[in-house]
Length: 126
Image (cartoon, rainbow, N blue to C red; front, top):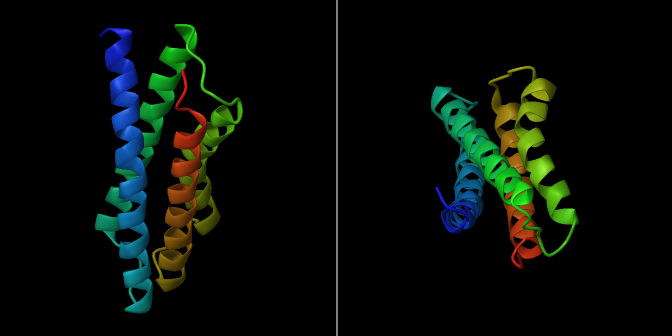
């Protein structure tokens, strides 16, 4: 895989991630307002989200090792936080699946939505 392909995939996953987080926020808020907790479908979707952030990190590391740097150094902070937030919330909720957990995951999705947009804004000039 050449570097141009890595850059292309990194950019496409970045676009997919903010859209995915927006959908996750709506879904988790809907569950909260309907009085529902977190079910296996939601947890599976969060697993996909974590895999997306991990893929982004791996691609970012490949670009860094190849000598490509983002427009701002804070891009590394946004990327690191994106990878760590989902496991941190899992630990914080202790795997709870009640209505309160739906609200926590909804807020997490909004946070990651914003973080994804900020990361895109700081990483565009290679």
